Length: 228
Ligand SMILES: C[S@@+](CC[C@H](N)C(=O)[O-])C[C@H]1O[C@@H](n2cnc3c(N)ncnc32)[C@H](O)[C@@H]1O
Image (cartoon, helix red, strand yellow):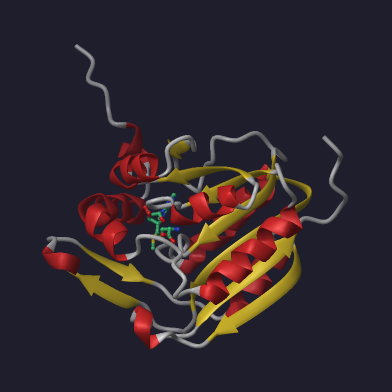
């Protein structure tokens, strides 16, 4: 008799822990961070600028999309965007809250996308659970799926030490939220073959409960985009 193993059985321990964490907290997370509300005008401006840079109708992936609030916002700005996430519970919410958009289960370490198939990729606070030594593999994967002239946007909390979230909303799960320095991420992106376009640091917004400054980088794959 053969026994089938779940598809995620071969994933590294930190990926399995992250998936279990977000499966457990998905509904509470989605309720708390429901949309990119008017209270976050600077984040929305950054994402709207990214959408303009990439161009209307361009194929984009929101990797680590969670409940799909960024996916929905980018779709409202005219992008042909789909979401990818580890967590099936997050994906169920994303599909429920964004009818008509496509959301697929997958890992940023091995995206189910052909080489050079995207004009844009957004990682909005989704690399923050990846150990620093594994980030080069993730950025190489982002680089692989982006076409020449394609743009990457990564957002993350700025800092040095991780912050461990223990039993959020009372769920029996815990996870490290890692922080990075923008210059560290810029260096890794350049090593992966990206050219840096913009780096921004926003001060923490106490109304959103943010304990640290928030960083984002936009980087571009060298070359010109082919007209489709
Ligand atoms: C802090 S949440 C951010 C969600 C969403 N981008 C947002 O802003 O609401 C991090 C998300 O990244 C996903 N994630 C973490 N590691 C991932 C990986 N290796 N591949 C795909 N998704 C991942 C988690 O499942 C979670 O939904």
